[in-house]
Image 1 (cartoon, helix red, strand yellow):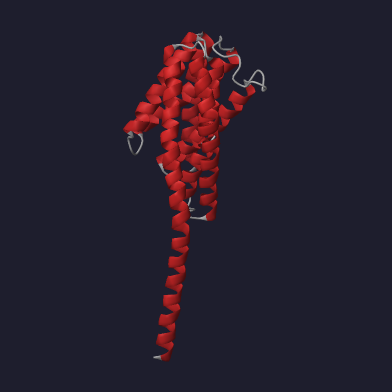
Image 2: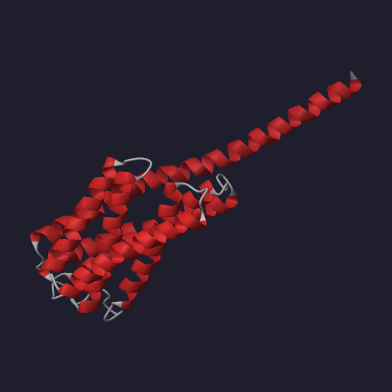
Length: 244
């Protein structure tokens, strides 16, 4: 691995940690998860921006395929590796240890480091990063709004729909195409396995998101009806009290 990539990863880990500590200082009454999600949202926006800037030709965003990674592509991947290392530590020392999330981080770090070591498949890996992080800001926004007291509000519902819509476009439309070209090209077996695994995980989460949106849509009318029914009962009780 190139020296400048190693330095980028080290500086990145320090930077993400610093941002987290600043968030804790600014929001002292908020939870560990709240401050960590602020860092995660910043990373997602930065990752999508850097991935977009690294595209060499927008007529074919993932070209050239199975080729040597450009320095800009490797820097984009290094920034995400640094974030994943930071977030892995947060997973281990946070309020709740999530085994699934820990395994996901470890597998992602191994895959990205392998790509950096091969210095190959930069277009495909940056494309995968773009696909996976595009919906992440709205994923974190949903949880931030809940802690701020906006659970079950139109604002939170809007964030839910934005997340679900962008996730569907990125993971279930762009994702399968990216997986196909990654498997078809002359890429290392580990990179192909990572691409296929990512698409399978995306499909699993897609079905869970569909269930979540269905629940949100059915829950909202029933909760509104319940509120109206409660108000009617209160009016009837007040009327009986006044006439009694």
